[in-house]
Image (cartoon, helix red, strand yellow):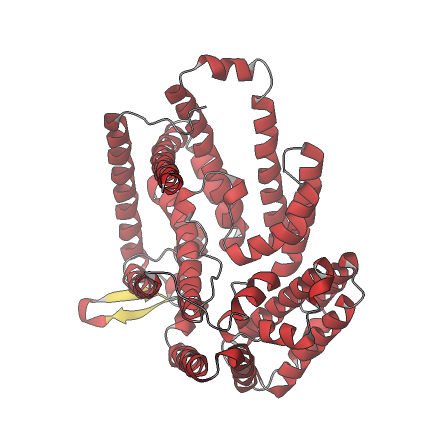
Amino acid sequence: MGIKTALPVAELGLYSLVLSGALAYAGRGLLEASQDGAHRKAFRESVRPGWEYIGRKMDVADFEWVMWFTSFRNVIIFALSGHVLFAKLCTMVAPQLRSWMYAVYGALAVVGTMGPWYLLLLLGHCVGLYVVSLFGQPWLCLGVGLASLASFKLDPLISWQSGFVTGTFDLQEVLFHGGSGFTVLRCTSFALESCAHPDRRYSLADLLKYNFYLPFFFFGPIMTFDRFHAQVSQVEPVRPEGELWRIRAQAGLSVVAILAVDVFFHFFYILTIPSDLKFVNRLPDSALAGLAYSNLVYDWVKAAVLFGVVNTVARLDHLDPPQPPKCITALYVFAETHFDRGINDWLCKYVYDHIGGEHSAVIPELGATIATFAITTLWLGPCDVVYLWSCLNCFGLNFELWVQKLAELEPLAQIETSLSEQMSRRVRAVFGAMNFWAIIMYNLVSLNSPEFTELVAQRLLLSGFPQTTLAILFVTYCGVQLVKERERALALEEEQKQDKEKLE
């Protein structure tokens, strides 16, 4: 009840006013904290000179982001520009060979970046999983795929295989783990699709074309083999009307996001501040809540920029790649929480949906989530923090189903039936607000540190109770209601569009 119900305009206006005021107040506290801590000894390593002409320093705690847009910026632009250029030429001259061009160019880029021995190592894993796929046993393909993935995540095999990389550079470890991990997932997808469609007789060449597509190779997102193969095999692909405009708009948004992050890091040191817990403990509660929230927002922006750039290139190649993850601000259920839509689709197709079915029964859902997060733990690299993160999010996903099942029983179901649709929406938004902060806390463990998460939880839930706790929940409730209103409007627009198509 209440899902598609509109609230009064005045009430939504009040929610907007409260939310914008709270964000501005928390932002002011973070800005003052960043200015006060700019010259602390604990900040020297990660707060470096930035805009010197106005005396602003910059938060450089995220070395990946800094490397992407400083020392490796020209390399990335050169590699992706070359891919686009050769892809366009091949499409014009010999469109039937464009998939081969993608694979050859990608393999040459891997050799130039990581060395020929690394390429041979990945080819060995590709051939191994291709041979396993010939047996036509999905359980065997998945098992060997996970064993192959474990070899890149656990010692001593990971140390031995990392020796295949030629030379040393700043992003070597990131590129090694990204290229290796995604290669295994792609090969496993190929093997499982081969088992599901034995009549199609996929070849080793199809696997190599799939794996060495450069825009997806190191950082994803991952497309399942069936989708990639169907799209890349089109000899004369046709763009939908307005597609080029949308591609340009996406590229422009990615540039704007990169510039916005650069400006933001000159004023807000959200990645450096959590490293000094003594300093964090002196922050006001509002600034502390904003700091926790902004850490997750930044991680979403980082993923959105990465996938936005890669997806722009992929769409120029007439592919329909996975979309960037849903913004953390719009998340209030665990079932929609993910920071990589490609890996989420991969896990859902081959593990989560396969075991959990309709996700309406408690026991199958528990088994599906445990299996899914076990594989996710292996993907992220087993360690104490990842174990904790997996357990918390696995519990959160199951707890949602338990609460849903409980709400369907008497007397709770009867109580909700007696409520108006608007009141039902308000009640659900209260639970959504609590769920929102559970999502933040559970993911802050891995995105920042368990110590910082513990401090945030203690301040906001224990020492700040009831004033701080209720105030933050009310602000979050306002945000959830605005998100629900947007979802309602989008659903209504989609229904009207479908009705119009039926009439035509």
